[in-house]
Image (cartoon, rainbow, N blue to C red; front, side, top):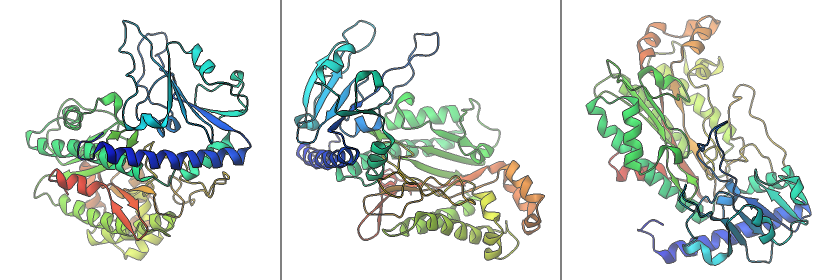
Length: 445
């Protein structure tokens, strides 16, 4: 646990968190007519016809309870009983065995250790009236249900409401990510490659690449226009235009998700970045309880239209730019998503615990969050402005294309695009930005 919080503080936060989740599991199990649930962490997987392992990521509902991602383990949750953790600890000479459970969270559990996977079920004390959750849960194990969509929908819906412990973990994940962002921006003066920038980020944030909450997007110049750019060029570009870094941190299984874009000092493109940053901060301030996130996404396009007109990219009124769908070419993804145990956290489109979903509007099909914001939600606010050749060519061929200054677009094509992303906690009275204080502590905005 982080040193600037006392063990007693973390113990209190975790105790309240566990109590909240015990109630959530009790409510979900009661709604589905079962006595409780067993959540499997999952198993290490190997490459096809190989003995090398893939990076291991535990089932999110296992990480709700256990800060460490124990492979081959399980948690048994039965309302009215002390939760049981059965963890697997193999003693061999090939790999380091899992650590023995320790920390403020262990007092909430009965803990048993097994050395082989077959012993796991025996320690769970019968499962015929329990639900099985996770990849390792199988019908042949005798569960009352296995990965029941109704049970998972109930849990996914309530998962949007973060406990204070979860918020504290995400604040720490933000601090971890901010260290990497600050280090990469300081390194830009040395003209590093994308590969080198990725290494700098991992080193500064203290994270192995295989353990990052998601694969870093480290994009120089035109690569910033590829939304999930996945490569890492080993040679720096001949001329630096822009640097977009979308990278986060992980703490106890909870993620941060941070994006910043930078241009060379004095480059006119920096003014466009500043305009998008101001727009993003306005949207963060509007992420308040009672706000329909679909409407907030629409608001982002209205504001982006003003940016496009102000910078001469669109040669029409902001209202026309918005109404004719020009903004959707420059911002093809949704405004953001729920954040937590997963980067794109589950339950973003659920209308209630019963499983009914509210689909995104047809003009914004990639919007991952369609719920009305409530206190306890942690969401990303990540508007962008991209120069994507394929989308721009379609716009050029359309009637709306006559409202675009194509010479100005051509000027910015080598810059790829801009994204500014913060993680925002919705509070009772408004919202609290989790990202900017962490970046500010590292000397960034």
